[in-house]
Image 1 (cartoon, each protein chain N blue to C red):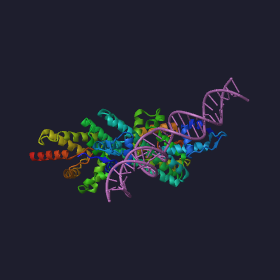
Image 2: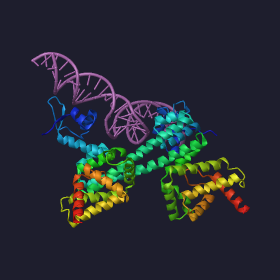
Image 3: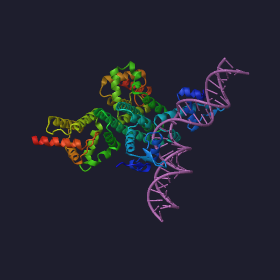
Image 4: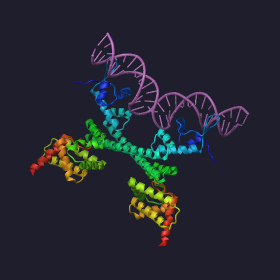
Length: 246
Length: 246
DNA sequence: ATAAAACAACACGTTACGTGTTGTTCAATA
DNA sequence: TATTGAACAACACGTAACGTGTTGTTTTAT
């Protein structure tokens, strides 16, 4: 029993709008198998099958143009198309990762500052805008290949919670950066920073030492929130004051 | 020293095309502060600042319309916009997750079958198309709330490798589903399936038992590759044959 | 036979510009 | 100062995949 559908029936059966079927006809993606004398479109079961395939490919994220191409081609090209699509999806996922972190950082920065601090937003975006490899480039002279690799891994593992805490600490230091390095509060802040850094970079003392050294030279830090010379200078002063006190 | 830029200079300094600045003027996003007698646009430093902000917001994924709205509003609305954007990003990430898994599954299915098996593609897409909660609905009568929760977690943790192996096993069973349940090959296949299942669902024997029970009743399985009655029937037969042999 | 429903074909709108054209203004040079 | 080449404004059309709306025609039910 061969079934024939008018465009309206096909639309109801598949959930695809009439306009869409109209459009698919127009671009030559699905041509109705026949027409009535008056010119109304008639779809047969082959057409239904074509539509199902188109919908499947559309779900996989292909453009209608690509779908037309794929449906005409052989299995070999199929594999290639799917691989390409997979790569596209992975790139998009990475982009969204960066975007999510940037948005979180901006959100936290508004929490802490209680207003919009544009320079910080710019630096957050600049940080996440470049691809991960590039971020660490300034450290090239200070850190080895493996160390950079490690930092990347630790960095990627940071949770929302971690980012939040980290930003809170930096923010607190920025607020009090001019207090006496010998004071209890100064020590507490430095301790807090160190704890956080250890949490992020594991208990890898050596890595942390190398990183700290490079930070002192560069006067500008990695991380999701600008570790600028204000913060680094503060940490230096507290560290020295603490050493002397010993 | 107030700097004034023509559209071309501003374009060169910021990397934004002249056409884009033209467009931003047209939609009222960035209006040049003044014009020459002849009508050429002149941008001042305020305009440069506006442009920097627009670019920052654009990077965060907002539409130009939303950006216009945000730049006019207060800090409060800012928070809300960013939260919304974050939710959008998260939804999109979930969608891409599903999409990636679907594409991987289709890719593997082509590997195994060496041709395009449309019904399998449809079921893969149907599986990933619904939201995660809905997938487990048929099991509602068999599994408790916590058990379903666990399955979801295990499922989400599956790596590419896992999916690949799983599909390979199911595929192999489908190829040999009519062999003697007492044969060595049958036992081996069933063993392979069990190993895989244990790998995915941990060593949680109880969970696996309940799941297996529900599978036998429903005759259709969860998972990224159709565990249909062919496969389930095969596993049943081998299991019984093995019990008797004991 | 007639009225209502379905349909075809066309047009415009959507986003954030790219690309190209025409006519005008600016800036540098002779 | 006149000229010429570069820069510019303003406009048009194209992009992807349709949604929405209109007009005129065909089909279907009564």
